[in-house]
Image (cartoon, rainbow, N blue to C red; front, top):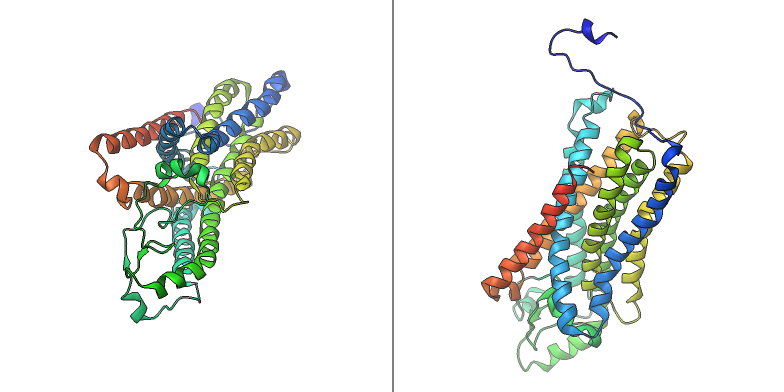
Length: 371
């Protein structure tokens, strides 16, 4: 249609397939596989490494900085890099049918947040009440006074080599007369202490299962986002490729820091520490594998097609809901509001943590201008 023949104030919508693959930059596309893999993997594994080394002063300071920076990265990723593109994809004028009759991006985000809440609720109830070796009636509850909730439930570190760093992950002060869930027991009550000792292994297993569920969900949200941006980079046109390539290197590195700092803070049981490295390595491979797939199927992959936009929009919405819940509840609330150490901390420590988190969010929000 001739644009000059359109009525005034008309908007021309370009609904092309979005595939701008050009072999002239094939070498750069291939190099992006290795560069982004290195940045992603390094970002995810560096926090874990600093947590494991014995130089407590250095590693504690760095891990604390990376943890709060990573929190900001995850929160900004949820809103800027996931919710925004999901809304754009699922409300695109190029879509047709019933999907255009409702704000599906926001609806899916809402459902994801509630699902996350229900999973978290069940995990915590199992952690506290799932032990059959301990009485759970009202009479027994009266003997226990709950402490303030915190991010790891008051649990002590199993790894003595990393105990100094554990304080910087969780900032927890424990009462010696507390059970593994942070409930005060009656001083001098040997029966309660014996019950706690007998049930500690069961409690630890339940708590670790809850932690593992949370980190699985967090990694699910981040990895699916990484897969789609890898596919997009693989078929991006030459005019936009250089900018997108550069931005995604930083984007994935910062996301890796956000994930890695949380993996480092998990209280892994003895013999399970390797899981933190495995999760970090898995994240590092997500985008490179997606780039390889995108290059191999570039002739048939159309990121601008209706099917691709719907799939991308749905998964971005799910990931956004997961990261919004994780960022606001698991990270911000647990690190600042329900954290006994942070509540009693000096103002400069709180300000430093807030500035670190704001800096991470600001950097990722800025990268959202290009990717």
